[in-house]
Every structure is written in structure tokens, then in C-alpha cells.
Length: 191
Image 1 (tube, one colour):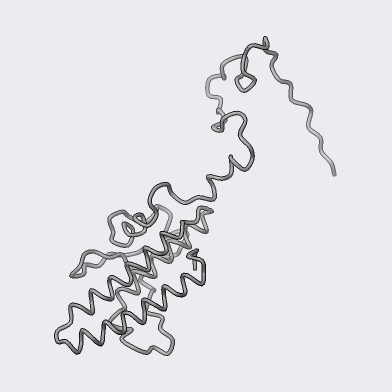
Image 2: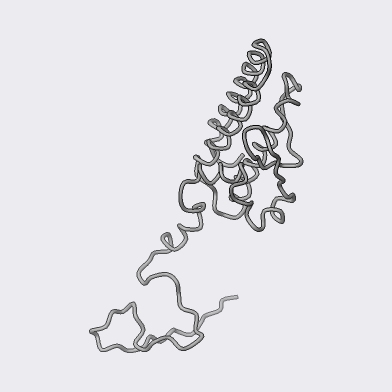
């Protein structure tokens, strides 16, 4: 079935006015097009494919440390509400369902669980923005991975005894490197 709309009549102008402006001011309560005249379809839709403006690495860090709350509809979109914990190195936001997903559960996965839950929340933020049609830039995923690395090394460096510090630093390096390599393989996009 083909439906044809009747042609749109444009108001006549004297020829000296810009064709992008109407001959008469818009009527009261009339919604004005927010796009400037002369924009292309690609220009009008380009804003949809970008995440929030500004430094998205800092944005991710602010989310993970609780400096800013989660997006208003995060719980609705992602199915959970992140919660805050206080660590010796500051507040961290957590995914209540997250865990250290280590193949074979080798190494100190329980000890690094708080870092992993924060990291999982970071990755869920990447998924959230992707689902909303505004994926975050690679800097956001790099910031989530950097926070994970920092949190694990903070835990390792807080241990008593040189042997324990060495052991946890070694595992922190292994876990952080594996996560960072995986992010690189995935192009630093949403996991």
C-alpha cells in the first residue's frame, strides 16, 4: 500500500530573507525544531552515537568512586541498584551480583572480590550507555580497568609481611594484565 502525503506549501518570502527562517514568527505553544536549518541527516543523528560530553575516563572514575550517582534509570535498564562500600582507599560503588570471574577460581579471587565488584559495575555502565544508544569512548573502559588495577594493588600493598605483599602483587599483576588484554582485544568497547 502506498500512501502519499499532500505537498507542503512553504510561505512566500520577499526574497531578501533567509530561506531557513519562516516569514512569520512561530505560533505560541508551537514546538520549534531544535536543529538548525541546513543540517544533514548525519549531523542531526551524530549526537545520538556519542556518550556524555567531557572526559569520559573521569566520568567513569567518578561513577566507580561514588562521586556521582548512577544514571537515574540505571536500575531499570540494568536490573540492579549499585551500593557503596568504604575501603581504606576511599568509597567504591559495587555490583551486588559481581564477583571475581577467574577461570578455575585460581589465585586470591575472594580477596580481590571488592575490586572485581567495582569493576563489574564499571562494565555495566559501559553496557548501560551502549543500550541507551550513547556508547562511551574507550577512555571509559580504560578508566574502569585502571581503577581495578589500582584497587587490587592497594589491597596487595596493605598486606602485612613482605611475602604476602609480593604474593598479592603478583596476582594483582596477572589479573590486571588479563583484564587489560581482554579490553584491548574487544577494542575498548562495551564488553
